[in-house]
Length: 607
Ligand code: ARG
Image (cartoon, rainbow, N blue to C red; front, side):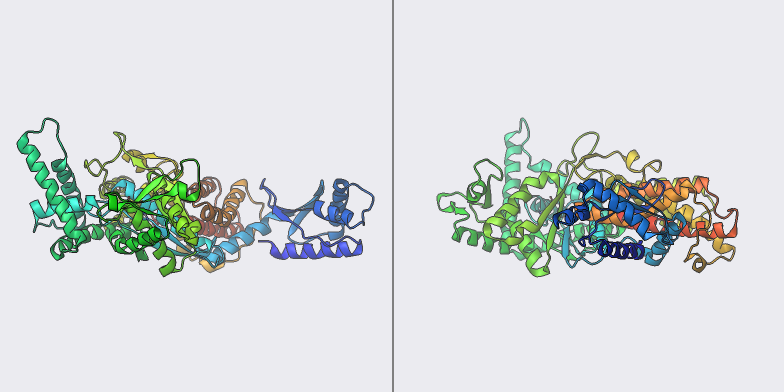
């Protein structure tokens, strides 16, 4: 922000060194922790130490000499227009910016940057974020929502931080669970199809529950029941074999029903504002993964025990030379030659890097799959796949219900669509009560944004590694540390600006603010929050932690609400003060919007 001043001071220090025969030393600048004033600080210890090493000591021990240098440089520099005061303290030189100047620069920078304020420079690295990868033939539940919300936010943050970003999905479209649904659909419901994207998805999920019950061994089964169940089981197995052999009829059934799930998934991704760039499917990496296994066998990394009725396995720990159990032994092919979940992940990883030329691959996957992914990466490494080091698992805790774990097999899930509908209805009820004048056509849009804002924020303000016990009332709360509280800061800023514009004011007049008044603590605190944003974007991207931005958005909104309650804007004492504060409101509104956008939340114009 004060690069020009910093360069000027740097030049003055160089001149000082030359005059005093001090070896030129690269200076380390750092911001002074904010305490009501902004500033930067530079240390002279390195310079004093270099001077001593070069045999040019002026007769003082290094710490004392550093202090002396700071004092001397302070006198040498003299006054600088935008610097309010300079202090020499124990070998450091602290330079404080004039507060009105700083405020004007921060706001000017935000207004210049607009929706790009806080974005990092291009890093020249391509990152793929894989998320939103539920299994097909089920419905989308609240656990999938956590995954998708987290993945989308991470993708936005990484992209905004300066990485070229590819969003990938990898639905599990094949496996015993999927075949179970196809079998039951074919046997009991063939030709039926409920109308409606979500109805169809939910209907498939119900078929799965029903089929699971039919295939499950019961206590005290009668011989007739046992025979029936075993018959079903044989049919299901046959269905899987026919799928594997590419039987056109089974493939068609599978594709049709798969499409119903994918339609529902795409619809929900649309609601959540997630645009997937690359769709991988488990079924498509099945064949390529078999070739990798052959290579692993040929190179003696995997052991083929199929001749003796066994499977193809990799003893990962042994092959890596580990003496303690870490990755264990894995099956890559069953005795009948079919692949497993893990096998397919080997081919997927390769495809990601080789087809899409990415530099880094992030997997947003439930913590229960940590071992699975660590095993995948370890086998890739054994195989000699160098980019295995560039694969990263972003694990997150799972979502359970107060009554226990969710289970798609048992039909004990909370569906995303139900929560979404409930969220919308609650917002509509609040509007009805508090803002009955809102035009009908505006209500649906506001309810969508605020309802989803509440749900999204409740998922992102928890650290990834924490489990969530999903309580509808908490997730849809509008008070306290919530999405709507942050959205409301945007709405309030907007309403002040609207009044100003209605009175004939224009945004152009706010572009170059001048602060001639003494800033109040509320203004200073709000500006301080605004300045934190760019560095936090980088931190969140480096740590893969959207929560950093979620916490920040709250702090920013909080600073805005305090400012809003305490500081008159349109009623400010003078015209100059009013303009300056209006530009601060405009800038704050922009940064709230930018931060919310990284969370995948949109603020409405009114609420
Ligand atoms: N479809 C899997 C599931 O629902 C998640 C896929 C995770 N990604 C991966 N590359 N294994 O459990």
